Image (cartoon, rainbow, N blue to C red):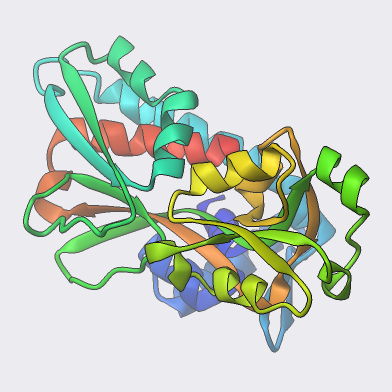
Length: 284
């Protein structure tokens, strides 16, 4: 099931292997063994990677629940309050910080009352090697061999707007119909995201709001101010927003949970990391 989820999230053998800590040939063999055992084709091999079949898509929510339960089981096994104590600092964006708190990150203290969590929210990169935090939830890939990572989610980017905005300004059924619409664009450090420059450059759009704070952009879109680009898992989770289209040409966005090798040896860090992984599996 780990291999199945890795391939569903990555879409190819190489990226799935990187996330699972396996080489691509091993992932391929395990996929072949899984398909043989289930007597079902789970992926179609294409030049662009692996395309999941309807069977694989049906299996996904069940496999994700198994993953979340396994993470919870591991956390329960490690529920030793004598060793699971102290402060664990989590560096992430303001958007992910809010998501983690809203979906129960702090509930981990019910089993570990001597554990404290500190969230360092912002777009500026935190240096885990220098010990500025124990964990980071981020979009960037690994750059140092002393860091270890797991993929929390892989999702494409889409465009979203509120129902009130669409009723007032008209439906959007494709890229060409963006002409004449108001758009909300990430700026600052977030301006490096490909969707930021792509959306601002669409012919005929009007940029009415820029921000380096994603929650502010989401709030503006939910309030009917315009069209915003978001990872589809996040956009779909906001009740006020409607998904307009998926920007397939911009590729998929991977979300990583990263820790330093030394920090990962701490039981408290592993417990918090497992809870973060379970939250992303449940939400996305």
